Image (cartoon, rainbow, N blue to C red):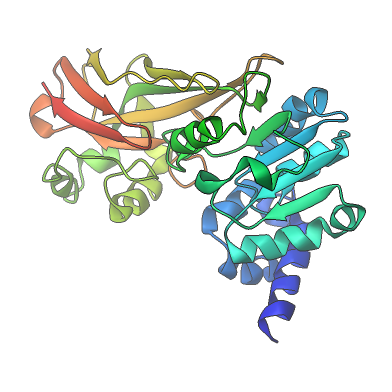
Length: 319
C-alpha cells in the first residue's frame, strides 16, 4: 500500500468511527490511528466535546465565511458547513490529518465550500482569503493548561495581520484556567514520589506535567485523586482582547494535599455555553495538569507564584 492509499485508508476508518465509544471501535481504527497523534483519536471519541462545539457553532455561521484554525480531521469545519456556512477555510499542517480532512470533506471541496490551507496558522496572510477577512473564527487550540497549542500567539498573529478584526466572531471566545489542591493516598505511599521533588520549578509541558514519564505515572493512578480544597482562578483570557496577567500568586490552606490540579473552563459568551475539563483525568486530550507540591509544604498553608507567558506557565516558587 503506497502513502496515498494508506492515507485514504486511515481517513475512511476515522470517518466511520467519529463519535463512537471505545467499545464500538474496530481494530482497524487503532491500526489506522498509529499514523495520527494519540490525543487526536481521543478527541474523536469525546461525544461531549463534539456536541459542545456543534451547539456553539450552529447559531453563528449561516451564510458566513469561516476560518477553522488547527483543523485536524476537519470536524469543526464539518459542523460549520452543516449549519450553513457559505465557505470554510481550514488550516492544518499535519500531512496525516490533511489526508483525513480531504477524505471526509471531499464533497464540500468539490463544491468549493471547503478549502484546505496547508500552513502554520502563525504565518497566515490576509491575501490567502480571496473574499476578505473571515466573519467567524472557530478553533480548538486548547492544551490541558489552555495555551499548550500556541493559542495566544496564533490569535495575536491573526489580529496583527488583519484576519481577526473588530467585527470577527471568535468561537469559543473565553478561556479560564483554575487551580485546586488534591491528594492521592496511593502516590504518597509509593517510593517514586521522591523523584518529583527533585524537579526544577520551570515551565509545564503541553500536557501540564513536568515530564512525559510523570504524565504516564499519574495517568495510571488517575482514579485515586481526592479533592482537598476549592479551585482558585489562575487567569481569565478574553480571546478578542488577548490580555494575560504577568504574575499570579495563589494561596492554599488544604490540610492534606500532594498536587495542584490545573483545569480549564472554556466559554462561548454569545451562547453562554461552558465546557470544563475538571471532571477529566490525566490520560485525555484535554487532560488535567498536575503540579507536584514539595514535601516540605504538605499539610501546611502555602502560596504558589505563577509566571504567565503567552504559550506556557512557569512556577516561580512555592512559599
